[in-house]
Length: 124
Image (cartoon, rainbow, N blue to C red):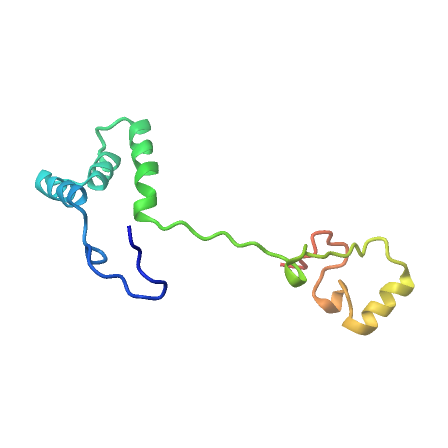
């Protein structure tokens, strides 16, 4: 069987996006039935007469078709490495003073934090 040369365009065959016979037949049958599976699931989910557990199952099954899933994000440090953190709780007074000289007042009343507020959220 002779293949085409690399880089040469594809010729012949079904055009991109054209459904095959089985897909076209299934779509015709769904259209003739008058109700898609998604429409059925939504109908059951909205039915007051249906059992609550069944309504929940239909909602779970229909959700991916109605609401897109959010993409997960991977956070990383420099060059894809781990996120680096620094524990400031055990720093000496000299180290804290040097940091404050570089970055300003850390966790003080002037910085917006309430004195003695362990949450770091400041006054409401």
